[in-house]
Length: 471
Image (cartoon, rainbow, N blue to C red; front, side, top):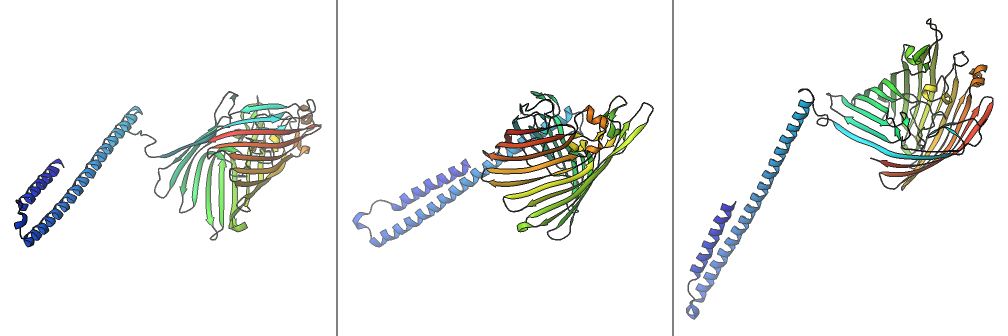
């Protein structure tokens, strides 16, 4: 580029010299006006030619400069790619062979979660404390208020996509919080979700394998309390399973979804006779299923109605000789999600069934073991909630729930040996305020009431606030 610039500079000098020579000495008054006019025209033409050549020179210099910048950028990229390849080779070598590769190289991995601090005050002693399940009987202690503060609900997750396998899309999810036990200021992590998913979008079919929500009774109300009305009318939890889902378009705006799962039966520790899990001892998994219909209703907004259920066995050993008793857990459920307009959505569920403590129903009671009747406790209930907003930075939720157990299923010895919970109700309201897209402050007020068999009931007014930072 420098040689080109010098060549053009020399040409300019020569041209200027030619102009001077053409002009010659001053002819003064003896010059012919016609000759002077001709010379002036020739000079203007030469000046115009020189200006065009100067413009061409500027354009060539600019093009050469851009080309050199692009060459430098490409060279930097080539060197960076070489460095990355060397790093990958080092990782594979340290991993024990050429079959290992950096997981970040071919997968789309997204970190998400939130940091949450909960603080709560109860006017009466509430089980579990950090979150409200039921109010303890006030037979012996009345209005025994308590205060709790925890960061256990802080949540971390990884969303993983790919690689695809032809028409099939693969993905995975891993999510934990810190409600796995341990001291309050050094809690143990707990797996919430850990599964892989294979989807065939063209066929609208998918298979999920791992731990996630139960297939039946799939909804959760939006509460500040960690227990989203569990033991208060909302049943269903998370457990290992293999699930198949098929979606069918019945018409342009109406969809049918069919879901079926084989899940791990999780029961109780059978003590000295069988220190294992009574669900494991049954030798059979739990079967779950749900069918739901989605269709436009109010203002064309999609309403979903679902019917679901489960069935699973447990086995209790009654002596060391191998005698045992089989008991069964089952439920039948309805769920509804109905947007009314842009700021109001109604949602709720209803259930009936038996032996539901492993599914967070029956107010935490499933089988009458203390009376040795091994009767499955029947329970029923549900919840209903309304979500309002958002209006600017504000959104609100109000709702209620109830979980009731048939007290006739308890033996007389059970009602004497331990407090028997027969009904549990809650009414709640909360507000979420977004300081920005990541930071939320929430306040919730709820009233819990628990009835007991032959003992005084318990009631508590619960005030809870939370500070949440999402990422």
